[in-house]
Image (cartoon, rainbow, N blue to C red; front, side, top):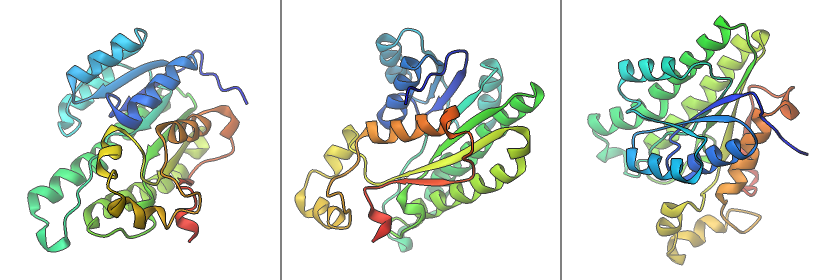
Amino acid sequence: MEIKFEGKRALVTGAASGIGRGIAVRLAKCGAKVVALDISKDQLETLKEEISTIEIVNVDLCDWKATKEVIRSVYPIDLLVNNAGIVSIVPLIQVTEDLYDKIFNINVKALIHVTQMVIDDLLNRKSRGAIVNISSQASKAGLPNHTLYCATKAAIDGFTRAVALDYGPNGIRINCVNPTVVMTDLGRIAWADPAVAGPMLAKIPLCRFGEISDVESAVLFLLSDEASMITGTCLPVDGGFLAC
């Protein structure tokens, strides 16, 4: 299966590092005109050095007004990957209002806002489009001390299904990818201790954590015309974790 995106403009949020960076690079290599959005200016600039055709945009997605202005400035957008997100690993009784606001503002509010802006553009152009939200296995299974994170990812799944219902008739598809632990640079550090990684690996039938390339491939498939009959779905990329 050869996936190409010539003539398409793709916006990737949280594109400066990790999964988002990998997706941005793969999209560019498949012919898309990529707009990489992130809060980290320095990392965006290194991405630009790696792939000169990528357009970089530095903005804080929690700033509603600035985000609106930036996204309008990079129209048209045909493909969207909502990857930006943060994790909170604390017991429920330690959750503060500030922590709640921080994780919901980026994981849910910003995702909804960016999706709204892209769909508005697609509707105005009477154009078809595809969106992929990066969710998590944590939307489907509770994880210790991940109460806020699990809640935000479950919200993303529910939002995705509702948007698929509303805008499918307009030719706009939206899906989720729900990875397990992924070996980003930070992931390799966080899960380096066998005492920490062992219990999680024991729940994964394929006996390994995900690689960035695993998520990239799933995202590119769902964005492509090869997935033209798929919308409103949440695709686990979890090595079988949710099958247990």
